[in-house]
Image (cartoon, rainbow over all chains, first blue to last red; front, side):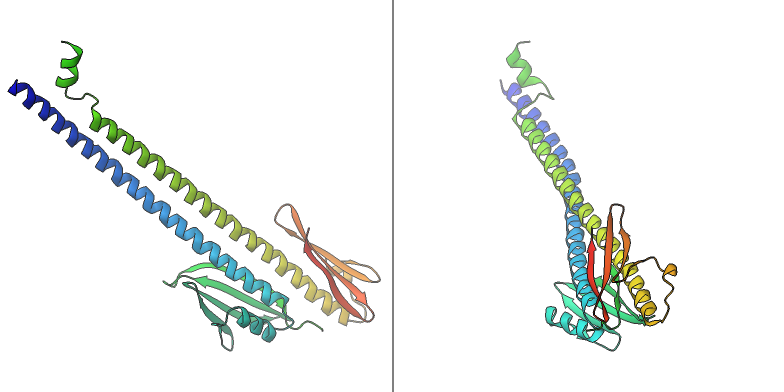
Length: 135
Length: 124
């Protein structure tokens, strides 16, 4: 009777160890998948946010009657925007939006880029606008 | 050997612990796959949206360059419209730029008194 009980507890212990091993292996694989999914989700969110910021800024700048007015309109939307002689920059929700402009053939070429806090570019857009629209 | 003896004596019989483990593993795998698939769809959608915006602004830039050329031509006494991809009439100058495969950005300048005014700038 005692030998039977010992054999039963031994098999139970073996089964438990196997179960823990299999669970640990599958959990380690699944955790990696969870982490990958989380990273992809964060990237998607950052990209959507960047696209939203860049296209909003692009729409404002391209429809403004002049560059100065466009930048002032943009500053109303983004009060933290710092405007320099050939560029502007603002920190928004963990991202940095940078706007550079050049003038060429009667057009202003705006390059609008969004960067993450690490400094790598997430998204950029090039927008052309007339230098000055007739009133 | 009776059924009772087999269930107690076998080394790899399906006990409660094994069933629970199988259930947990299946739940973990299904959840992780669902999460990955959802995240991938989100990411693909974001990229598609980003690409679409790029295409739209590229078309807009092209239309804006034509707009600039039209304004320059209007300043000349005898503009050569054949060099520009525009349709010209007495009161209207229009041009179209493809946006992707299925849409067009249509721009129209209309003469109002002595000025040319943009009366249409839309994707159709």
